[in-house]
Image (cartoon, rainbow, N blue to C red; front, side):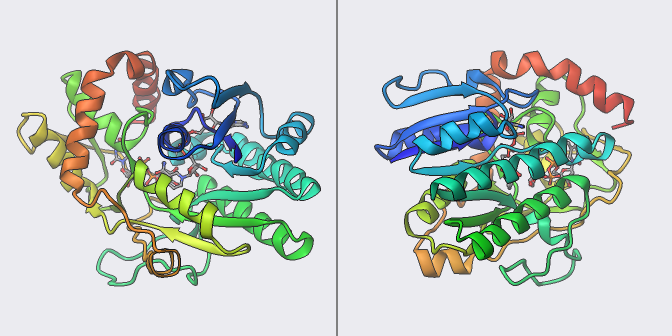
Length: 331
Ligand code: NAD
Ligand code: TDX
């Protein structure tokens, strides 16, 4: 198969491209704008006979039409992805997440191309800390931030294009990913690289917020499973039963890196900060037979810490500017 992967120079997209090249015989074309979040270094070493990189915007209708026409399937990762950025400058989130997705699905419907839309559990809003419930495919949409509301909007566009135009699409909503190649603006890489720099980790608010962590490779295997066996028009939730509160994650990072477990600071909370995300992935597991491989979060975190220690050249160029931005925000 010839896959067109949008956002393939970002965190999860680049992990997916490496996973596809290692585990299938598909050819991959990456379309990526190389925003602050895209990094060609994340795609280094891929075989040129199976991989091609195209720099461009998913909202560029002519370019998108040309690339979608050549592809057997599109896997759509490209997005503005950081909640904190969306609170300070929402506009790029509308341009890329809404108009970019619209541009892609219009091309996919013209060419009858199989389309897989990557989304997030954040479209469902949040759960109470003491609520035993988890998100399912039936949970009503209730997004909190400009980021999650534009992702919710993009999901709804895909659903409408399936119903009204027969778009050959599936959707997946995944929980928080961790692993190599994640930008240092995000929680886990920010704290790991802070500790490497001798800076104390920064916890928003009390640190009680819960995220449901999944290794990026497990997200990739789930997406390949849906691409292969998923039913058109269906939504699948992807999660690996990895609930942890932020304070526990920071303590694990400090311990693994040989620091006292309490060597962190509390900083100003994120406005509208979602309390808890938790995914019930029963549908994906029972209907398509998927299961995660990385069930040991501490081991996965240790491997991620080792990756950031060994790949300082990858993250160092972004670190100072990222921290300067957080400092301005009191975070
Ligand atoms: P990221 O910010 O690391 O990467 C996004 C990539 O998209 C970058 O390479 C960027 O250059 C590219 N991009 C941005 N705007 C573009 C445009 N207009 N045209 C072409 N390329 C553009 O994001 P990520 O964390 O890898 O997330 C990827 C996808 O997965 C997103 O759709 C996100 O909503 C979803 N998701 C992320 C998580 C998570 O934990 N990070 C969880 C669930 C779902
Ligand atoms: O320095 C920090 N301190 C802190 O306590 C940062 C950067 C974050 N946090 C908290 C906020 C969240 O509760 O850590 C948690 C995780 O934060 P992020 O890494 O910003 O992720 P989150 O907002 O949960 O969203 C992520 O998961 C869902 C991705 O960025 C989204 O793209 C995805 O949809």
